[in-house]
Amino acid sequence: MNDAFSRYHPLVNFLFFTLVLVYSMVLMHPVCLAVSLTGAIWYAVVLNGPKAVRFSLKVTLPVLLLAAVVNPAFNHAGVTILCYLPSGNPLTLESILYGLAAGAMLCAVLMWFVCYNAVMTSDKFVYLFGRVIPALSLVLSMTLRFVPRFKAQLDTVRQAQFCIGRDVSTGSVWQRARKAITIFSIMVTWALENAIETADSMKSRGYGLKGRTSFALYRMEERDRFALLWLGFCGMYLFCGCLAGGLKWWYFPALQGALAAPMTISFYLVYLALCLTPVILDRREARVWRCSRLST
Image (cartoon, rainbow, N blue to C red):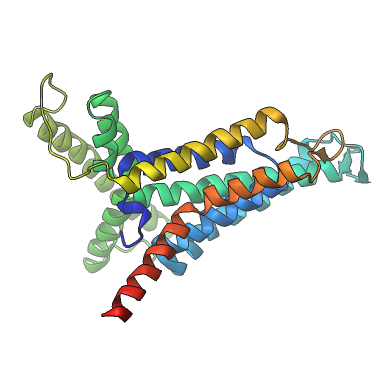
């Protein structure tokens, strides 16, 4: 990867994504949701570029809108009644805002997983958990990289089928269905064969055996130790903020939450700094690189 944060130690990367994912799912405060979603989209742009992020948003934004529409249809709690549905149930402001908050939380989590998939490669995951849980770490690493590999292989198979006149966009409905089933069968066969080959390859290398050594390029440097201290501070500070009630927000029966006190604002600022840590590190390294080039 070209960004600075992905070149840090895998433990730093894993701890960061663990913190942002956990707090993105736990903190339902509107400010925290906005901070998490902003940080996830910004870092995704740094990693994958604007085009890739636009494609991801095409998937995540419908999730937000769907949650905002579906929740008021089934959840009628709240004291601010806007109108009554044809079924006679009330449509409340609280249920609409809770649906938007739930959708924003899902979008933030999905975007963070997009960043996780780009930074936490399979070799990093195996490096961290290969000795502790060798079998599970191998399965998880294969699962995490399965989706992008499956998509790339699917594009290859589609192009091959198109070249021999078996494109799914032509022909009658029955013919298209047969072509689609053929492509699906090819992909299932490829996935099963690939899984068997990977398992046989790792077994032949002695993966998971007691006393087996492994080579890794990752070394804990001073910058990694400072990053771990920073992430640990942010995680503990936000945890204390949760225990103190400075990040709580209630949607039912009425909207209420922590007041905008100096201590509460400090929790927001630390959470913002945590979510923007990869972007800040990348911008700092880019600035140092430009200054070094100008000095030479």
